[in-house]
Image 1 (cartoon, rainbow, N blue to C red):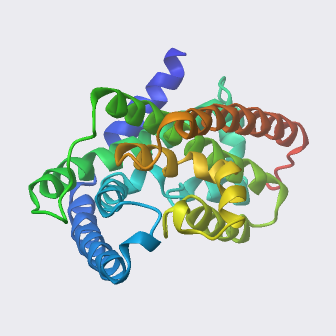
Image 2 (cartoon, helix red, strand yellow; image 1 turned 180 degrees about the vertical axis):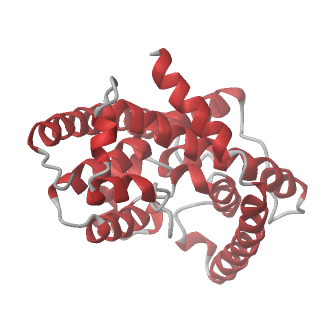
Length: 267
């Protein structure tokens, strides 16, 4: 376990070095966040009763999404891993006395957390200082906050496990680019990254909420604003645990199969 912690620590420290990129990204995220708030406000003012979420919950969803964008976004993948697989340099990784899957998992978590850490504090600080109705407020109670924090961790792990699945599936393709584009498009839409899942029409919404993509940012962000509570929240947490176990076992199984069948050409 200590060796994987070392991989995590090295990648985490490396991710904290990209401060200029984080500052530039925050400018974009503030502009996007305000644009979303204004757009949804215009829709809410036409007919508030027609919307499945309170506007305050929608505002919290938007700012939390922007604050933790790097933690959940599907496009947060490491290009060097795809390059190693395609070029054959994966042979060097196979020589390490470690599990490739667990090493990449540690690296993925570290990269996402470090990049989100650089951005989340300034964005949340500004979001809490904004006047109503564009500013964030604290959760309804301590229990809601603890549920939000716990599901954030589970959502991050599910996002990392889905990312690892793309890496592993790249072993079985000539190029991982097509697979990557397809997966990113699928996750962006079905995880609530474009619009929150409650805005999707039935019965498509019911199906989407049962898929692994809904167990990423959708659950914690809706819990924070109070849109997901009670029995529905408990059901969502159980789905998070189920998909985390399923994706990890599937990814490990495919990784072992790929390691046995991989052929590296060249000298």
